[in-house]
Image 1 (cartoon, rainbow, N blue to C red):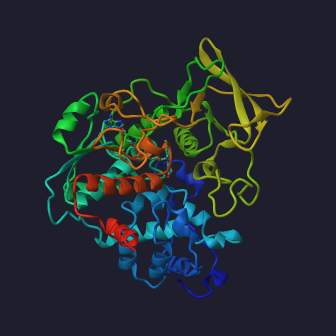
Image 2: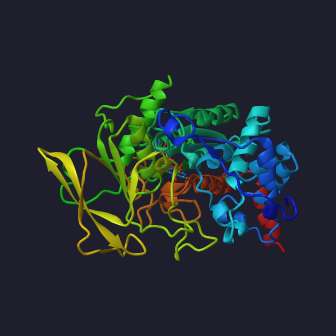
Image 3: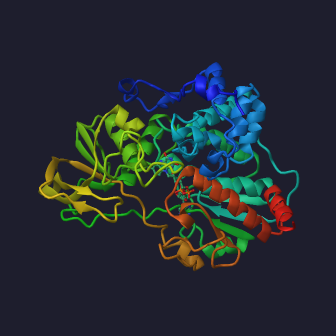
Length: 488
Ligand SMILES: Cc1cc2nc3c(=O)[nH]c(=O)nc-3n(C[C@H](O)[C@H](O)[C@H](O)COP(=O)(O)OP(=O)(O)OC[C@H]3O[C@@H](n4cnc5c(N)ncnc54)[C@H](O)[C@@H]3O)c2cc1C
């Protein structure tokens, strides 16, 4: 439980961000961890609050007070074991999760929450440094085979869980490398690709086969996959871009953020000597006036890349209104996570955010973007915005990046060939992970819509239990707990 009254004595100390003016010149991780003695102090701030809302805030149900206490007591290896009980990849969540656990920390009601995410990352990085994290192949083989389509965090989590239960697992990925949006959306400054590769090497040692550059539904048909495997898990993400039906959208120089981010991540990987595809039509922010439309994670990652490329000016337009100083508004009281934070790693490096601003038109010359027309809007959500009269403005721009999210998974190819039913939002209909087709399961963004890395891992873990049951595998520890509760 940490130190009695530790939270009264010790202030929060989070990640140590590198100087923004220096880090904008490279693609290295933008922060460092606190030294061990300070981390111990941070663990001491966890206050044995009785009802640890952080458990519930975390989609994985991480045992946060337990490992905070173990870190406080210097028991790092035990902390690692407790952390891995609920999270397959804490090195991903410890770096890029928006930490709903911290928003729901009881200390956050009237003070700074425990630095949970930093403690999580320190535990797992210590585990790698000490050589405590090794491959954990299954003790027996079930003789059943599963194909996982998609190697994002959901696909990786379901693959590892099923392999550890003794099933043969093959992961099919259409991109040239694993990780999904972690590799091709999130920049190295937030999550270095070496972190993904380090974990994939362990998964391969555990016996998972990876097939990169293989699109199911194109290179291998869904029917062939059905013939070869006892079950299929569809973890293809939510990749259909949300577009804008705005006058002037046809001008060149207006691109989807993800097309830009894919290219930037590939270029950075190539410069680091990793194998990577080369872009055919390069989208570059170098020397340009850039307008990013959408102020979520994707928009922020565009800003950070554009600044590193040497953009002349970067503005991000966010339809949400400015946050109050507390960082919370009436729609997101404790213990809910705020929709936006007052600043972000990218905005600390440069760029300007215009709150409550909506694009009304794009203007171009000779078919090339030159200006973005916008106006102020008010409202509590993107669905009930009302324009502020007389607030129209024009921003000079020669590159606009649309970062307003994704609508649903792609419906052609694999999904069509398998004949999977869709829900009302166009996601794969799989209320308890089983799809409308026997032996085919779905998890991650493809099932629930665009979400977070932590949710995707939680999806993969839960889905694995259902697939295991379908395959007649041994009950998992979670199944046994559930049976014990049901039989009471
Ligand atoms: C730019 C950006 C930044 C983000 N930043 C954060 C962040 O900081 N923190 C956070 O928590 N979340 C963040 N997210 C959200 C998070 O990355 C996603 O919610 C998460 O990756 C979803 O995982 P997934 O496995 O369901 O899907 P994805 O990561 O989308 O992976 C799906 C995989 O399936 C593959 N695939 C698709 N179709 C086929 C096929 N037919 N055959 C073979 N392979 C196929 C794709 O190539 C892809 O690799 C961000 C998202 C974006 C776009």
